[in-house]
Image: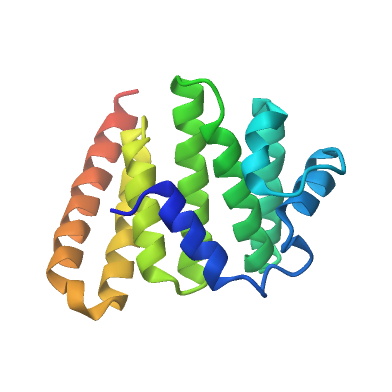
Length: 177
């Protein structure tokens, strides 16, 4: 599995001209968070000491862009969101935020038909998952990606089976809660 930075850089390289007004991540941060004018590059997110609320604004901006089918803007928002979440203090809240970021971005990548990147983000989301009841949705999406990547049909079948098991487990656990 590719690392976060490798996946992020691949996404940025595939969508360099498609990110429209957010080709400059600093502009994204200024628009969404009201960050100062001197923010020019994503690595500077770390020095901003963003709060969970700031991170959430980025995620919600990505969700809204996705709903309007502005996949480029949505990817930029989720990328900035994930970068900001990785700067949060380690703990349950950080893990949940990172899970939400990778899960959300995988949805955008699926719609953009970037199936390998989508599967990588799903793997990253599952590494940070604390809620087994939602895993079947991600596993189902990953299996669909693997089917689209013709060379991985056996892995797709195994992933679909895992999704079914996770869905069954989720149904049982929600009945007993």
